[in-house]
Amino acid sequence: MQKGKNKMKLFEELKWRGLINDVTSPDLEEQLNNGEVTFYIGTDPTGDSLHIGHYSSLLCAKRLKEHGHHPIMLVGGATGFIGDPKASGERSMLTKETLQHNYECLSKQIEALFGFTMVNNYDWTKDITIIEFLRDYGKYFNINYMLSKDTVKSRLDSGISYTEFSYMILQSLDFLHLYEEKNCTLQIGGQDQWGNITSGLELIRKKHGSDVACFGLTMPLITKADGTKFGKSETGTVWLDKSKTSAYEMYQFLVNSEDEKVIDYLKKLTFLSKEVIDDLEEKVKNEPFRREAQKMLAKEVVSFLHGDAEYDKAVKITNALFKGNIKELDADEISDALHGFEISEVHDATSLSDVLVQASIASSKREAREWIKQGSIQVNGEKISDEAFLVKKENALSQNRTLIKKGKRNYYVIFQK
RNA sequence: GGGGGGGUAGCGAAGUGGCUAAACGCGGCUGACUGUAACUCAGUUCCUUACGGUUCGGCGGUUCGAAUCCGUCCCCCCCCA
Image 1 (cartoon, helix red, strand yellow):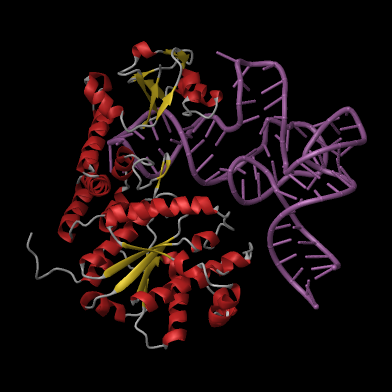
Image 2 (image 1 turned 135 degrees about the vertical axis):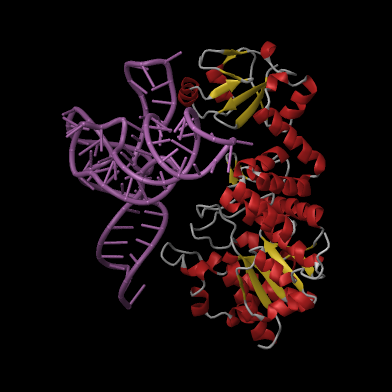
């Protein structure tokens, strides 16, 4: 695939992929296309794994890296203590232990997947005294300016603590610090970070003069067709950590992407070229039922995150569960297919309705009975509509494992000893 | 410090003494349709194999009977100083 002459410039490509929501200056285009920029992306250790929502940002950083720029990944050990203001209200504060744990998990994960340089803003924030904070930095922040930022403004009615109000100052310090120490001249973030990024730029300009060549770039939020947040599956958040979201679950999440959005996701979550994606777009239009774009998306992402072997396994499980009859598979295939599910232990010879409750499939017996009555429960591939049906290990598929299906595509495995 | 308005099921929001396990909307779940979709339609959504039990910020009280009345405590928002 030689196409050197009509290859897009970096900035143009980012735009085409829909990765640019806004930039603080048009000069950034020139910098990115022809310069060599040190930039940073930050995230706070609010969880012990990144999720699919973070993925496009990190990929974006990787795209820049491949064009010769230098990424710095900041995990906010300090800012995590404070919590950035979100529209829904005040955050509950995380304990030091949790933050430490999360920090370690995230650092490890990012290093393993992307190999970026990591920094922790706790290192340069922890020794600032309250007096220094107010004298050396607070003076540069005008309250009126801070109040006009969306993150704060949106909270003025419902209330915001002084703690969260101060968050943007801390984040500004990060940008300033990285500019001074590492010549970092660009901060990239989600579109909700615009206010924090620009206030960091303000701080740098006030300290170092208004002619410094520093920039901010925000990426649009990835959404579903109905405008809601992308990244929640039936079982919850789609995590990048395999032990939290298996390769199979990740595959399922992506292969079920909406027709309207799958091209958008391909652009943002894969390195596939414009030619390949344009071709897939045609296929979505002409033969949507084949879902080739969805399958390609799932393949690219799962392979990148978990490797080809995990991808193959995810496809195999999918084929066994959705295409074939689970009972026709041999023992090896079954144990392979059933691997990767969270397995609940249930006593031998338990009634189906109790099994559903004990395995946390149903939240109450009433609900379990309702589903069984409606015919939405299958045990090892057979529909069971008798709630007193006894689930026994002698009828298990293999290794005392029984497969339970709820509704169209929710599978659970139970183990009986 | 002063004045006002609030806290009802996952969320939003009705309800101001019995007809209320609590309208309605959203969300969730299931079924039909289908491409393991979307849309649409139907059912369902506190627990209980259904007798009953426990709910409307917490506690206490009035009453035959309370989400609804009284007392008290906790929390939130707005306005004025």
